[in-house]
Length: 322
Ligand code: ACO
Image (cartoon, rainbow, N blue to C red; front, side, top):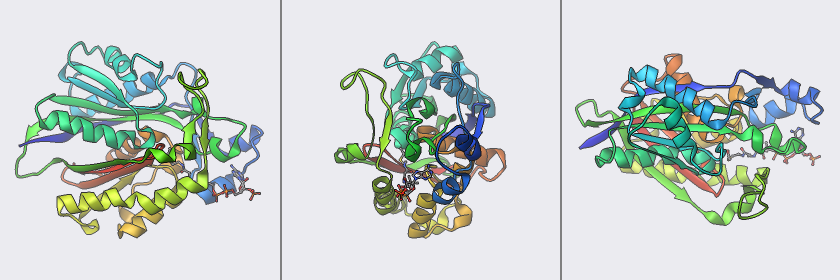
């Protein structure tokens, strides 16, 4: 039995940090108090003009390779979860592949908005566990600042830019039982209008801006996404008590805490980075994983649940023995 084992993890954040107070100073009618109380967000990183999604993704991927002690030539699958590609095509993943100097294997993007990284882990796991690839770079990279309507205070304060990545390696399962243990994905396309970008080649022909009915998203996120986590618990024969860490998509502190409480996951097991990064969509989970690796929280052998919901709606969860 082949397992997809995490052998490296890394992240990259643009240097430009924008606090809530700085947004208010720029003329957005908001306050640090409102944003912190409703969302838990204190600051976000915003990409500069040269920091495209593939640039952020390449730096995160390199950091993950460094932690793994691998070189780009060891990788035969590059999978990038993003909704903010550099170009409509070719994929951001192929740009990252080229920037890293990888000439073999295959690379593609996966678009499931904020659930993109969970979808990408589940997808890479299918390739690795069936012998379709040996080592995968699984990247979440986004520049949502380029999709924001900076005149709309109900959305522009919520998002940030960044990238994170893990390296998954196909290994024979052994007594350590490490690897991606199980995953569960769902989507329901009837919810498009609650969270979408009002542009694209098939509509306006422009890139468009992000539009969101915040209350509806909030209600769905807390009410419905626990189904995939419960399915993962069932399929793996584990419970909330078995988890070492819960690393959810970082959209909003209130959504995260309400979900953890509903599932009976102790608050001290929750990795929270939304205060530092804002909502970085598909990048938020690998950014949080990298932060918890760097400060020594996540260690080999730990049982880690990742979970996300995004536009569509799309949602999913995966359980990883680190
Ligand atoms: N600063 C100050 N006031 C604001 C701001 C702001 N940035 N934005 C809205 N307000 C005002 C509103 O205009 C409204 O004023 P009014 O009562 O005079 O009309 C008031 O604050 C309350 O607005 P609501 O929209 O009702 O605020 P709510 O409590 O619902 O919080 C929020 C809004 C934070 C967006 C919440 O609905 C939420 O967290 N939703 C989930 C959004 C989310 O996380 N989406 C992403 C998940 S999926 C993904 O990542 C793609």
